[in-house]
Image 1 (spheres, rainbow, N blue to C red):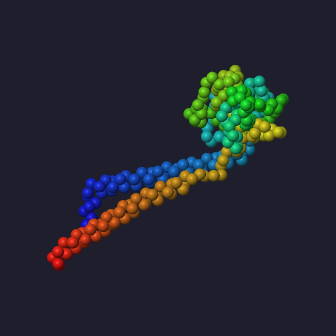
Image 2 (cartoon, rainbow, N blue to C red):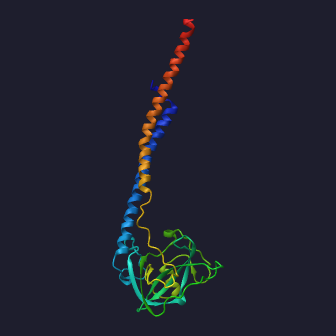
Image 3 (cartoon, helix red, strand yellow):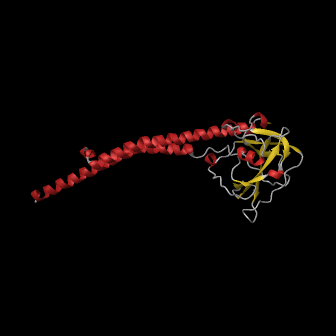
Length: 263
């Protein structure tokens, strides 16, 4: 009664089931690895945010590519803001997902080198191509504290570096681009300002990166593994149902053959 599993339809169904099982197991492990990566990133963010701030000049240099281990590391810098060469970064959102600009102000150190400081978010004006209203940066020598961030690239951020933008507007925060614009030596990466906070709350400080949620990846992994386990169970259920239906059909055929003889 099980010879039907050798028919073309059932061979195709069996091969499909055999292909789905390892694929679903692999998808489960893919989601599990994403879960592990998220957990590790949360631990890194928390450790770097809680670490004692160090001078930015100790962890980066001109042309330096900030490694992932140093992302969000607490750093400090002392210098004077160069507001004449301040630029804004287009298409950035505030903590409520409202689109506006980030304010990027060069901080000139005592040795002439520059640290790029992202002072926070400001809304755009009525004209999206016009330079937005930006609160003036503090004058004189200041000491700032913030989170170390890596230079942005189109490949890493997914943001297209558009050309022909209005004056003093950019798409990416990139130390090499700003070094060319400023004609100065710029330290690699940039500082995302956390202190001192603006007295009137503008520019709006950028919130700490999320390091509490772990996302749905572990749940997705378990789902894929349950699906993989369900495939052979489903195959057995279908086989047994097919066998039962064939038995019932054979019994009806036999009964119909016996009815004329009985009559």
